[in-house]
Image (cartoon, rainbow, N blue to C red; front, side, top):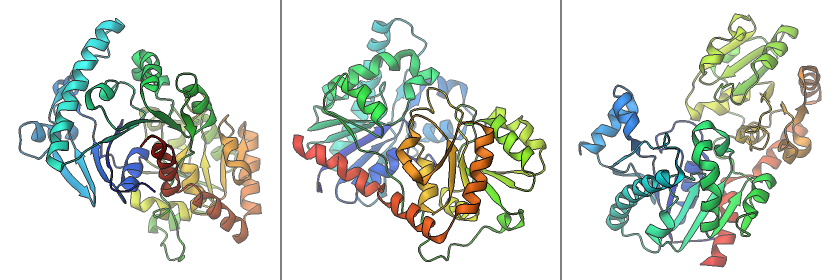
Length: 397
């Protein structure tokens, strides 16, 4: 176990994000024995000018004008920094050399703000942990000269249109620079190894402190008690980038005795979908993250109805660990990655298999199986995850 070191953790999510975040969970775990400066995503010029009425922009303006502090303590041994700077919106630039010129300027602006926080906190010999941010952070090794620079590769970010434009080119360059790469899948490990031999598969973490009901006293939300059993449930962002609306429609139409309960915010496609016309489909909207285990507890079967595309096929779906940590029978779309979960998840290729496997999940569930799922999920704790990072880091330090 590594102790009494100073870490700078940053990625694609700000501290204020109110859904589960690998970057935040990792930072919090590291802070149990080390000091951590978490760097939130700085505001960009375009957002500042075009989204003036948004809460995010209004809050950031308070930081920029000095009404609110940029650096705040958010826990024991952990601070959050909202860099008091504006970065230029440069993704529209097509020429790689011109883009890199301005990207380096952006990185230097952020570096200067982080350096002020480092000086204020008295951090020394800093270790950088970059969670999947291949644009911001591209030049941090040159600027910070850290004791170590770690890149956490866990998501197909470069397949999303914004990051695809320059990220596909820049990610390999960053992987070459860093001291080592840690990944949550063999696919990402093999990809990273093409550019840096020090690339390691360490799996993923799960917030087991939140997703558990050891005492059995976690109360079921009152609103869940009115739905007809069995309840087939999903928790997470409802977006067509990752989820299959037509599959959900098929499941609901052909099994009207089931209650299909979807917990989470919707994108526009979901809001306009046929699912809203079905009497046995219930949209509960966004719920506080600390309440999600109680909703999962109310499910008879938990599902992850992914649509198979280049993003979902290779990604680690964190919600599977969360479902299993609650002991729930889980049914999911069969992707290249999902074999990782072995015999603990029912995997499906089409609507027919989905319906059959949900029936099997309902029929085969036992207290013994629930205990097996919980035991398996416990091997994916954030403590285990971070300890694997430390194992590689200690070789360098």
